[in-house]
Amino acid sequence: MTHPTVVREAARVIAIEAARAYVANIRPIDLNNPGVLVGHLMATETLLMDIVAAHDEATEAAA
Image (tube, rainbow, N blue to C red; front, side):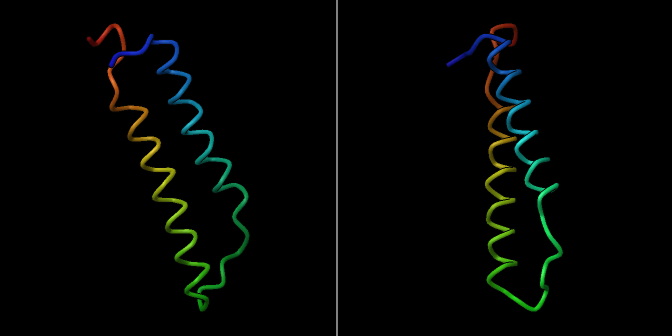
């Protein structure tokens, strides 16, 4: 399914800004707490998957 270019660009900006906001709000990480480390890794993986998905989908111009 293709989406209008404007919609795809908005999705890309939203995904990237969500990742930036997450990184900006990270406090110092306790490297001795595996639960906190796993939580950050899982959140980061989700944000990266959102960024990839936003850039993988075709736009009207590319279709």
